[in-house]
Image (tube, rainbow, N blue to C red; front, side):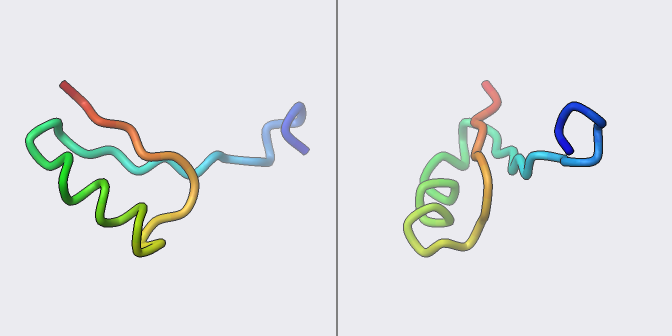
Length: 39
């Protein structure tokens, strides 16, 4: 599936200023996939 391009990873992006909110989302399982902090 991934090689065929049918799988899309879930990526949640947060600005660095919202790092605490990103951490809370991870702790409470408010997000799935990866969390990326944008500088």
